[in-house]
Length: 460
Ligand code: 4AD
Image (cartoon, rainbow, N blue to C red; front, side, top):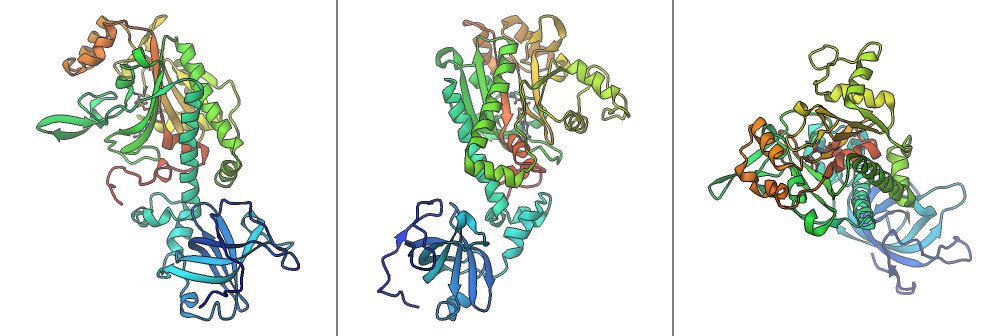
């Protein structure tokens, strides 16, 4: 195959470039371009071979007229994922037809750069369409599944959401920091700690950067981080990973209401940014056609009201032991999801009992049985945020370590904050994968992670 030297020189473009002059197939010539990509879809017909090309930036419909272009070894061995460069004239799609960005490339020359065996169709398209995140074959082939349209759309959305958080925090004048992943303190209970040997000492992979954030707001102001958190979760659920991306923030000199207002504000602003972007809006429409921007204010409900609500359903929503809920019960995943799905809007669930919450949470001054704590619950997923006001009294914190059987020595740097100018403060952590599962209507958080890690899986 040879390029016709009489044709105009081709301009290299990426497929997000929409500013290409389109021909009409008659008098008006379109721009001649050159695009690097891979075959996403392939249809061979008598008169034409149709390729949908993808380059990571977009999709392009390409037509190769039957003839020299198609009667050669390279064209005959085209397969899904074949890497190639195509040259040709860009034209508007004829009336009645449809194609990405309403354009199509009339190929006059191509070169294959990387061949592919013709066995991928099942993996990249069919399996990712099925979206069965429990399927071992799909998980083993995550590196190929990610080439599919849905899986990659979720990842593109994920990037945008992460950047939208960063933008929003900047607008709110929060400072980004990067706390360590290798630590010697627990945050959310010993049962989910990943332990490892650190030069002969016991250390853990961090469960949350919260304690570190609490040590820097004194000099940096309100702070946040987007880091990995690790949990040795010993059960397989739709919403638990062993390694997840944790968006965490800490706000100084606030009260509990300020914290609730802030959480509602940041979630709403991030959603607004996503929907204001045409490309992202299109992904949401594709992945989650029934998505509705949450209406504000979010419903605020106390834990004790939730217990009453669960018991008032007909039939009542029972606890894990199969009994009606009583004050002090953990509202387990199943009950929580039922409640969120029935109420069907974001809920700020507040004031959980002291016994079922972490050691550092501040008690409600009006009712010491409960903490100034909040979970944000979203339809379809359940809890996506956990936050609280922090115990800021030195003696109370020392008492809390004792009560929870936590040796206080390793926490000296955390305790010190209550010694040197303590302040009313609070913060929260949001699971990025859970936020995405809600936004993109994913059945589990697994498809919201590039390479999900959970019990029994640490590959690819
Ligand atoms: O409720 P959690 O455990 O709260 C904390 O870690 C606090 N120290 C955060 C803070 O105040 N800075 O976790 C917070 C959020 C959950 O609401 C959930 O979205 C996510 O982190 N999360 C998980 N996501 C995926 N897999 C897991 N195993 C998760 N565990 C928690």
